[in-house]
Image 1 (cartoon, one colour):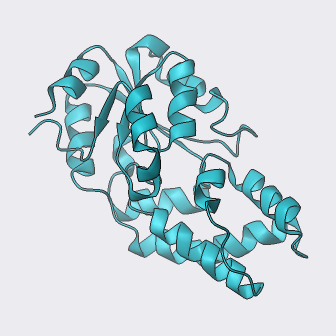
Image 2 (cartoon, helix red, strand yellow; image 1 turned 30 degrees about the horizontal axis):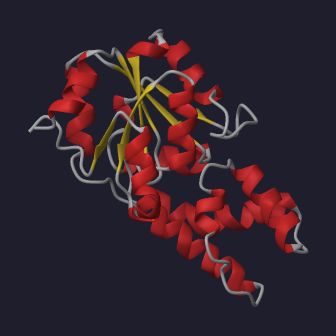
Length: 221
């Protein structure tokens, strides 16, 4: 049992979850997609790329690739290439992190409002949530692309809080990457960080900033 996390939850009525790297084990997939994309352009994947783009929405990432590496494809074409490579993985292969379903079920039993706040696209996150049989636990599904923003800004967290009708100070955010954790904390949310291999180089910074840091969602055990 994680007492600190339980204490935080006891003060909250709503929970907001990031998806990639937080509730699903997908960051390796995106690393593989980036490798395939750069290989198609006869390039090696640049060092530190994932950390630079992790908080961006799809359009921002595609624009970053276009501006930084001068690819011949348009932003829309780059986006579509990613979608084509990712759709089968999200629909059939990507799995939940341990105890995620049990944790969401426990929150629902305790009458929490639950939202998804992701930088991913609807065509990817909805099939993934359905395939893993957790779509039913979410009251609201939000993505940064709809709001033309990224997780450098608190818009998506604030919108989720508004939709759930839970005040910021009574809403907890679950995230795995430092920029998003920093944004949510600065906006006044409680933040519980979840370990992911892709963010382990920022673990010290994340631990310092977040209200709690967990390795697994077996919180109620």
